[in-house]
Each structure stands twice: as C-alpha cells, then as structure tokens.
Length: 229
Image 1 (cartoon, rainbow, N blue to C red):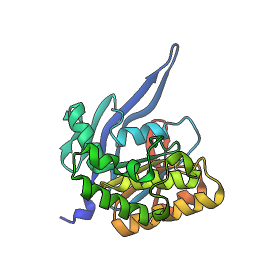
Image 2 (cartoon, one colour):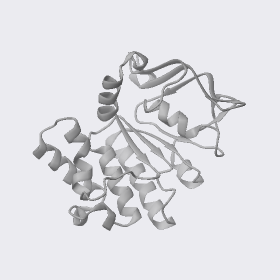
Image 3 (tube, rainbow, N blue to C red):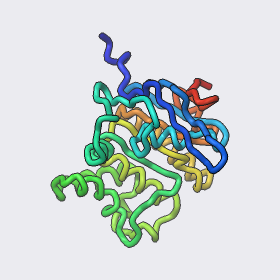
C-alpha cells in the first residue's frame, strides 16, 4: 500500500462540547479528519468556531469527549498523562500567538529546554539548539535574554524551540497575530521553507488569508464538522 495514503494522524468520530451555565457549545460532532505526512493545513474561519480547540485536540493538550485520535496505528486515547507528555515532547512542536518563552533565560536556553526535559545529552542538545537558531537567523542573538529581543525575534526563538526535537507535526496557533507585516511575512516564509526542507506536517490556525493560501489545504469548522474551504 502507498504509505502516502495512510494518515499519520486521524480523528475518528470525535466530539467535543463546552458547557456554560445555561447552554452547551458543540465544537465537534462525531467528526473524522485525516492528517497526512508532510502536508500543510490552515484552519480558518471566524472567531469562536473552535479552531484553537481543534488544534489542542490534535496536539493532545485537550481530549475529545468521545471518539478516538490515532497517531499512525497508536490509539492516543489509551495513553496516560505521562505517556502523552512524552509523545507531545517528541512528536509535536507548538507555536502560539503568545510565545510563552522563559523570561530571564537566553534564547539558547529557551530553545534547549525541550531536549533537556527529555533528558538528552546536554552538549548534543546545545549543538542542535545552536543549529536551529542559525536556521531561524538568530545566530547573533543566542546569548540575549528573550525579554531583550524584538517581537519578531521572540517568535523565531519560539519556532526554533518547537523544532529542536525534530517533530513530525508543527502546530501553530495565530503564530504572527502580534507581529507587524514585515515580521509576519518573514515567519510565514520560514514556516513554509521548513515544511519543504524537513518534510514535517504543518497545521496552522490563522486569520491571515495570505498565510492560509500558502498552505496546501484549508479547512474550517461548520456545525461540528471539519470541512474543506
């Protein structure tokens, strides 16, 4: 069988609701969705339809109320919290609108953190972090504390941190929502280049139409279903 036809990740009959005081918001309703190796997907649409929730479910930061999520042939719904944490650290890179970098630490220290958490050799992690910072064009800023970097530079550090473990999937939630046009374009191009260079799957939530059009597939959420745009 052609491996390109086998999903790398798959939601199967997944449902997700949020209960408010007097109402229920249904984000997903018994929906299935396949993600393939190396593809690029933009999740688009108005605020409040559940785009970030979908990303969190794919990234195992949240769980569906029912249904299953598979990575290759592994049923992630059977993983305990510790095993899920190891899975996230090794297989998925996250970039958020708010970069969540560690204040008081250098760019290099921030990028090294996932490797150190995974108890990898410190010298090897440092070498990988330096290479990744060079790849995102921050070689001259490795020793700077992150609070001394510009917004665009901070987001590049966050991107380098997300990629140091060479994840299979990069999940980006409005990664340039707080950046000016020049820095946004630069980060968009970098993510596109990294997809082509590393062959990793990229899934982004974005309101930026230009960025969405760079992705090979655009989807949205309508009536609890994930549908193409």
